[in-house]
Length: 115
Image 1 (tube, rainbow, N blue to C red):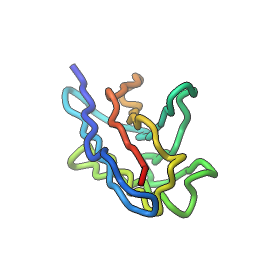
Image 2 (image 1 turned 90 degrees about the vertical axis):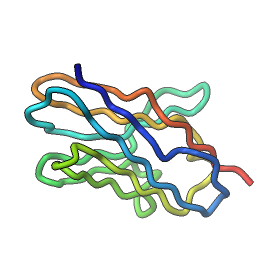
Image 3 (image 1 turned 180 degrees about the vertical axis):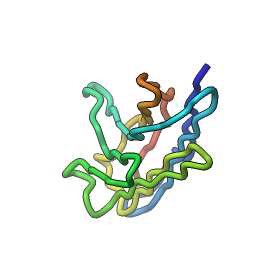
Image 4 (image 1 turned 90 degrees about the horizontal axis):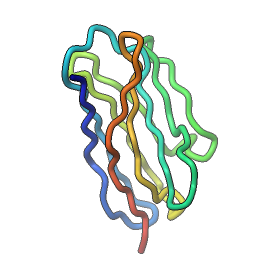
């Protein structure tokens, strides 16, 4: 059974930084895409960043220049470095991977940006 476990969320002041991690475990041969989504209260879940197997990255316009996605294939882990955080970044952050023809989701980690 494949599991994704996110970590690194918490409370941070505006302008601060956090680094999220998402580690995959279980029987996986090849992870093609690794992504971070977020869902604010009362809003739909939206893509934040994506990284392909070749390292190509894509970002939502709202986080470009502030967030950086990266992956460690040996550890089967994806990271999201979040800098210059704003109150509007407050949300539950979820990781998603596409591997071996299936998609898997983590349970989410809460990020709260508030003074």
